[in-house]
Image 1 (cartoon, rainbow, N blue to C red):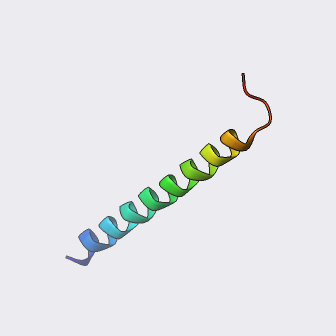
Image 2 (image 1 turned 45 degrees about the vertical axis):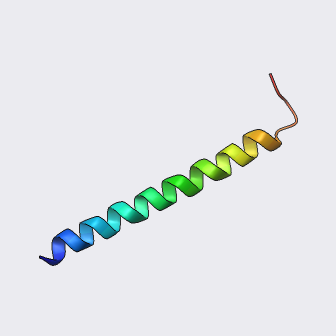
Length: 36
């Protein structure tokens, strides 16, 4: 069915966005001038 393909594509997109967001947050934390 097409629904399965659509679901897999949606999950893949979410995973990609999540990884990108995590990388950006990690970069911001690493760049931060304050390190506890």
